[in-house]
Length: 120
Image (cartoon, rainbow, N blue to C red; front, side, top):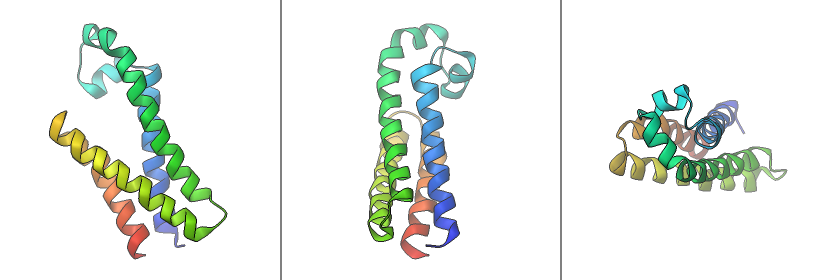
């Protein structure tokens, strides 16, 4: 496998690990309030829901890392394709239902990584 797909998939995994940290552990902190554009009050009332969302982002990152480090390159590539597709679908849904910037922040990196895995 070429280096470009590895780097792009790793970046998407790292992004989702960062989102996990923000949603599970920093939801009510200034950094997360700024990133997600919410007030402290809203964050306090939604922190259990955010932790659940963070866990799902962690599963996406774990799947991508599994694909990167799978001992069988063909299976690893298939795992990457599956999890990148999941990220892309989640980004499209999130962009349509929650915040349009999700399409750019999560969707574009996933799309680029998916394209590189499929075509490089």
